[in-house]
Each structure stands twice: as structure tokens, then as C-alpha cells.
Length: 250
Ligand SMILES: NC(=O)c1ccc[n+]([C@@H]2O[C@H](COP(=O)([O-])OP(=O)(O)OC[C@H]3O[C@@H](n4cnc5c(N)ncnc54)[C@H](OP(=O)(O)O)[C@@H]3O)[C@@H](O)[C@H]2O)c1
Image (cartoon, rainbow, N blue to C red; front, top):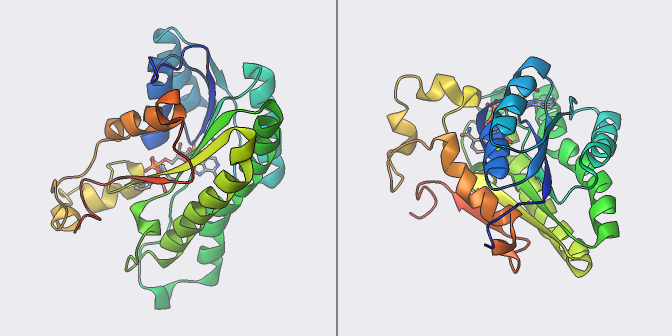
């Protein structure tokens, strides 16, 4: 079974809740042992129990990904706990500002870049050395449709995700000859804590121009992620897999 991850290992950042929690559980359901990272240890412990209920091993590896040294340490801890790492899911990210560009403070821009871009630079550099050294691996960067086109009121977030998509392509080219694949997963509007204020009243306005005309559940990101993590996508690298209910089809 090419989607099977039995015997594989994965590190997922932002695994305490939202999309990352669903992705970690999805990887475990497909057979992988997982390293679970985020800052909230009690939430990570709860996800660990859910992974173990699926019959897989899980390791709680707390880290703040905005801290460069913590990213390097996290990769080392994951390799020690799991033995080696086959799959890295750079999922931790978000945005604390929704509003017009003219109201954006530069400190907010820097904060968004630190969380969404710098974290992936530090984690990928440490993990890249491990994977390239082993001659195999799959890195999945959770970007966003916001990185594919202009999005009013989300300038910093959109620019950060566009940077992630560009980095994905470059790393795919640099690491491909060593057997390491790098792809981006680009979700559209997905119901999580990150954007609760936007969908709490239904959020119909945000999806009115999209084909499926509804928000995604976090579980709808799992199939595409398992595809990218597994041998099912063995000839797929440097790409953005857009999972957006047809938002960008129009
Ligand atoms: N929801 C959407 O509509 C949507 C659409 C496109 C892309 N995305 C992307 O999908 C990813 C996950 O988003 P989500 O909607 O699941 O968000 P969420 O529910 O807010 O979860 C964010 C996750 O990231 C972790 N995190 C945040 N800051 C961190 C830090 N400094 N260090 C370590 N971990 C940190 C959080 O854990 P702790 O708080 O425990 O640290 C949490 O596990 C993000 O990259 C986001 O940009 C989301």
C-alpha cells in the first residue's frame, strides 16, 4: 500500500490543536510514530494519548518555534526519540492581525514572519541536514491559499505564506538529488481556533465565491497530507497541493 506509513516516523509542529492535531492523528492512523510539538504541554499529552490509542508511539516535544535555538533542539530531540525522522510537517503558524495594510504595525509584520517563515527556516535547516544525510525524507510545509494571491486585510500573513511556498520550491531543487522531497499544503478556509471569530456566525461571506461554498473541517486536510508524506507521492516535489474547496478555481 503506497499510502501506508507503517514503520515511518514523523515530527509535527503545532500538533496541540487545530490542523496540526488532525495531521498528527492522521499520520498515526496511517501507521507512523509521531513527535508532537507545540508550547502547550497538557494539550500535547492529550494528543499523545489519542495517538497511543491508535497503536502508535508518540513523544511530546515542547518547543516555541519562534526561538531559533529551540528549533535546532527540537530536531535533535525528535531524532533521539524517534531514532530518525522520515516526515517533517512544518504546521505551526498563524496570524494575530486581520486588518488593512495601512493599519499594520511593523512589529506585527515581524512577528508574523518570525512565526510563519523564520521557524520553517530553522527547522528545515536542522532537519534537512538529517534527511539529506540519510538520503530520504518528506518535508511538508503548511502554507495557505493566502500565499497564492493577494488577500485584503492579511498582507503580512499572505506574504509569509508566499515565502513558505518559494522556500518549498528551492529546497525541493536543492534536496531532490539527495532523495528528499519538499512540498507545500495550502489549505483554504478551515475551521480552527485561529479564525474562530470569522466562522462563529457561519462565515458564509468568506466562502461565497468558492465552489463548495463551505468551510473545511481539519479532518479534510488529512488525506492530502498522508499523500504528501507517503510513497504515494514519490514523484511529487516542489509543489503546492491546494485544498480549498475550489476557492482558487474561479
Ligand atoms: N485554519 C485555516 O483556515 C488555515 C488556512 C490556511 C492555512 N492555515 C495554516 O495551518 C496551520 C495551522 O493553523 P490552525 O488553523 O490549525 O491554527 P491554530 O488552531 O491556531 O493552531 C496553531 C498551532 O500552532 C501552534 N503554535 C502557535 N504558535 C507557536 C509557537 N510560537 N511555537 C510553537 N507552536 C506554536 C499552536 O500550539 P501552542 O499554542 O500549544 O503552541 C497550535 O498547535 C498554520 O500554519 C496556518 O497558517 C490555516
